[in-house]
Length: 76
Image 1 (cartoon, rainbow, N blue to C red):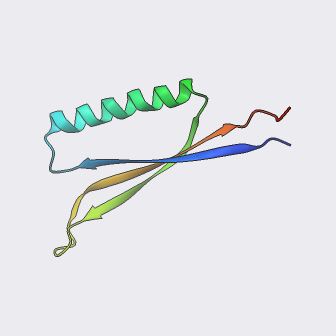
Image 2: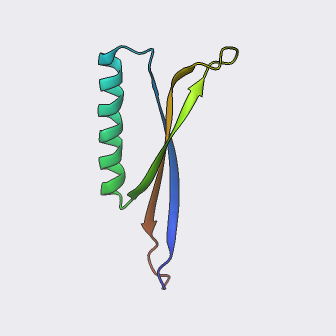
């Protein structure tokens, strides 16, 4: 039977950032995903969670929860 380990990462991208800053954050996240993949982690899903203002409850951006898994090496 296969055994797995899991990792969760959060990435925030604010709608108030300039389009250049948003693009830079997405590019940094792409680089991070490739690093995780090289270490054997597979992203299995993600979920966008809206970030709202404390008083207004207006959406200020999103936190993206990314879920990874990788197979554990057999003990031996």
